[in-house]
Amino acid sequence: MRTFAELNFPGRLIAVEGLDGSGKSTQIYLLKRWLEAEGVRVYFSEWNSSELVKSATSKGKKRELLTPNTFSLIHATDFADRYERHLLPLLRAGYIVLCDRYIFTAFARDVVRGCPPAWVRGIYNFAAQADLTFFFKADLEVSLNRILDGRPKLKFFEAGMDLHLSSDPYESFRIFQGRILEQYLAMSTEFNFIVIDANQRVEAQQGLVRQLVSQRIDLARFKRVSPLPLPPPVRRNRPAAEFDDESVE
Amino acid sequence: MKTRSQNDIVIPRPGPRRFYGHGIPGVQLEELVGKLIVVEGADGSGRSTQIARLVQWLETTGHATVQVGLKRSTLVSEELERAQEGNILSRTTLSLFYATDFADQLENIILPALKSGFIVLADRFIYTLMARDMVRGMDEAWLKNLYGIALEPDAVFYLAVEAEELVQRNLSKSAALDYWESGMDLGLSRDMFDSFLKYQTAMQAAFRQLQKTYGFTIVDGNRPVDAITGELRKKISAVLAGK
View 1: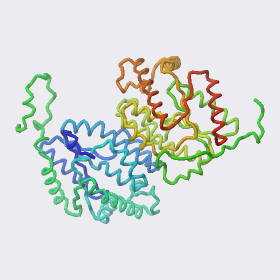
View 2: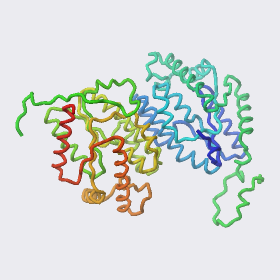
View 3: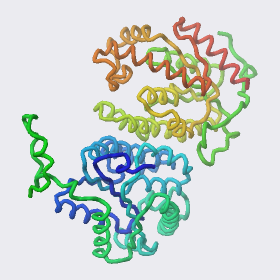
View 4: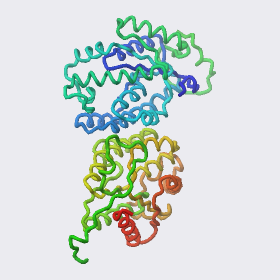
């Protein structure tokens, strides 16, 4: 599996992965704010957010219509839509794309739901490897408590109730999340996860994330020429140098 | 038609059963005692006419039937329809959307019906979906993996009709050609008529390619309706007899 850099895309893709409640969404949000402030062209994309399948997913979840296969396929459809319509063009255009969950979420979750790993990986093999993948590793109890404190009522699929692990949603959630964690850890080396200790303070984690991003990616290359996007030029015969100048501030 | 006595009703005999790939976990193949009959073919190939006639014949001979088809799932059919209207789907998305629609019907209709001993008539199956995707440049191995969840039908009939004849039938029926059935998303031609011919010819080539792997029966759909029904009935009778 090759990264976008290895495939010679001008853009770079940074993914965050981790259990619900690991704090990954907070971290990628703070990363986005920093990159924006630095004037970097950045785009954020969230798992399961495509307008295309939203109503089907919520209908499937509400009415408990989903099986492990359709659960997997509907998320793959959502991903393909975002990938082909947003991620690829933006990466071609030289953006830094931030993904709150990437294909590894499917690799972990769908497999825990009983889909064969080879089938799931085969379906997602149209997607390139992320250039950087941060895995936020919190103690299972910490993740569980964050979710359970903030949102006392667990949703059916979120708790993995479809797996019949336990009739108690809280117990089911614990077992389900524990299994997902096992899957993540098992693929950590294979996919070059950068493991961040998510039991640390928010600021400490963010400091580390920013440091790693600036070490691994030459951010200057991704900065906008001007702080705000310019309207497209009316005439195309201007010298190209004007657009390559990165010193404009 | 002569009245049938109870003894004339044929109880279908079991035939070989398998999934194309890993299938659906937890399904006991020997419990799927019904029969799965697939009719494939382009719009205008006579699929719906033949299926309606087969249902009539099967039900009068004592078999319970269920019909499935593309874009008929509870889960995503409306969403898929809406997305296609906007022409916003890129090829992988389109492919996975249809696969979701298929999987929902497979698990929630086809398998339970077969378990209850129904004859399931499928108005197209994975082959049309695969052929469409192949024509759009998708990888055959990727598609094979994706549809590894599918059950091998007891019989698959592909109604082969020449592209020129399909044009005539579609125009006489609705005085228009369908955007997707003309492959307009492929940019083969800006002229819908030309595009339809090119697309359907490419689809037929894809079906011939798939036939090598899946070995379905090609039925000459250029013949009169009765002749085709006769051939289908004969072949389905053999399937019901476990041959």
